[in-house]
Image (tube, rainbow, N blue to C red):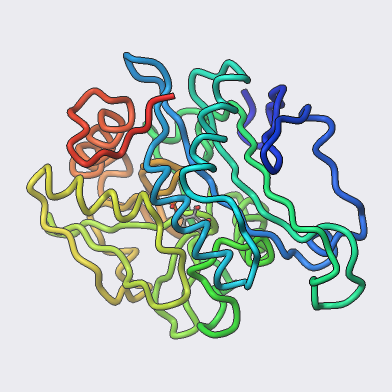
Length: 309
Ligand SMILES: Cc1ncc(COP(=O)(O)O)c(C=O)c1O
């Protein structure tokens, strides 16, 4: 399975009913197409011994509601209703594991910046998706560069919202990294400190302490990032938020990206400077293993993170 090509399924949930994948269309003059006015989430369901289970859907849908509120969107579907939609979509599409994309958008109607005359539509899409940064990335690790593009300044784009328009910045970071032969880019904030990857947060390890940049209004408050704090607690590692100057990227012992799509993926070099031994580090490995055991239900779900399908 390619990592970038969309792997179509059969059904998509749209505002309370199921429509065929190919019928999920919008007009070219939809507000969202013209101006990027849509919000979305990225969630994963994993195979467990008892069938598929969705990882932390409550937290994702809470963030989805936060995004709607920030962008003054009239999202009428509750967390419970959208959870049910996701569960039903996975069942109908016969998926054993998948990516889940809840999405709300301003459709056709308004010609101007004020979308009030446009339709407002909500979808839940599901499709099978493998390792985001390429097959074997979780084991081998990836190369990263510091991007020449920065994350937006706070109070320009609200980074706490997962809104489509923000991802033009992410695309610049990612496309530049790929064009220069790296697997992924790391963006600095306007203050010059490390912010996050194009679509994932990151952690560094030095002298056994696990560190991630503060949420400074330039990065997304990742749910995987928050989960890593709990997994570190389970494993007895010290973990904290810190200001992360760029040069720290070159001097740490281990580093990893984390996110729903990216999962827990080691970073083995930054700007061609090798990190540690240039392989997955022992603490990264332990966190990755704990993460995979958790999402696949191989350890007890003490935090209620798994929703069975
Ligand atoms: C810009 C950005 N940062 C971080 C993340 C990681 O967030 P999460 O762990 O909630 O998927 C994502 C993925 O959604 C993202 O798009």
